[in-house]
Image (cartoon, rainbow, N blue to C red; front, side, top):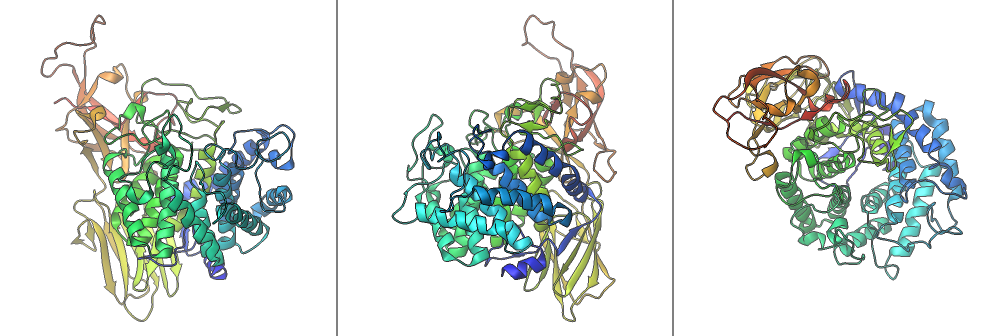
Length: 620
């Protein structure tokens, strides 16, 4: 199967069964548009930027047995995620740098397969002496995922061998009769399941299942945040929602879906799907962001979604996409693709700067002070920067973005025995089997998506298009269609096309009244894009006093290829209090009538320091 994936270009997740089959990175090609621009910036700028920081920070030289190790206990994983990004890019121009790093890793790996720069060397703590915080298995997980990417995109080589030796070591040490515990940070679970899919070696799947089954039985020590922080409080099958550290939770759930699919464990799959549904319904921000607690980077309780305290880590967005994609492949339900779209446009697209050299680690929905942009050479704490920063002491997000953008084409479409399904809309070409398609669209600036048939079989097939849940009034070739998946089945001929028209227009969105932090507020969305109010668009107006008229007519000024236009609503700018007491009465109609411009949230802070808010109080 590895040779088949090399021909097809590889794919991030390749379950052996399920409702839908993923396509390879050679079968789906991004064309000029919203996402190709970001993918190209990733390849042309972010790769160099990341390698520069991995080198100057000393994290890469840690593998050369430097006497003074640099970076946090998990810094090895950033090299592995960078290698995964290079593997998915599969660019001959990047091959020399890829091979140089792999040679360094291979030289540092111990004969038994162990590879970690923070444990086991003279003067360091023993191996596996801190499973709660040490991240050894977490780092192995990212190493193995890099090996999986290389095997699928390029073929079996030295990195794949390094990853296999590491996986064998994990199975030897943590298998039956070994250390009966898990890692405080999930990641090894989906990695081992994917390595099983690459090699066919059942040992890796069995070990992933063993880690899944152990989790939740208090095998790790308790900590100040409680065992829920690393999902060791209750067994996965008994949990009702995603909880604890948001990245750990989504990675663990991804591994659980992988194990469930490969072992035919419907009970486990149902449990994870139910946890996902609860978390989306009660613990997810309008942007798709997950994680509302700063102290432990964790999900809060139900409805704990205050915008100014949103943590919404970029890596949690990556983990959310990983999980929703696996559930989509397993069950084929449009709601999973809907959340992927929301997260892509409002978390993944928001984090990197236009030049690909600065990033948001956290993604607040309400910035109260303008903040300051860190100098280009400054490393900052992960959540300390109010604007995009060049690098972080915990720099998991830039490398996670790099591997996501590099493999992004793999999330656009799938196939089954009946045809092709298109889940995400951007200009692209699809060429799989005897079907070839071209997608033309300026989405999300415009809602027209034209799918042209380039090559088709002699027999009928089904072209399936996703209509997002927000797209009232959608049509396919002029016929009204409802939200969800719309199948178009017939014998197609080369040159004909199918046109999906989505009503991409601004709309007001109201929150569930149980979300205390935004009660009495309203947000503006346009298609899949969340909008926000920025102080740089207001002149001589008190930013915090702005109220939107909930009956406002929205004026749509959008239309360029990047969805960077403005939506104008009507509202009022309140009269500031006298400063002696912040409470009192307000007469009806208080304040001055104003027109309020809003711009895409993913564009915020690209025009300099500003205050910002997504949820704006109403005049009601």
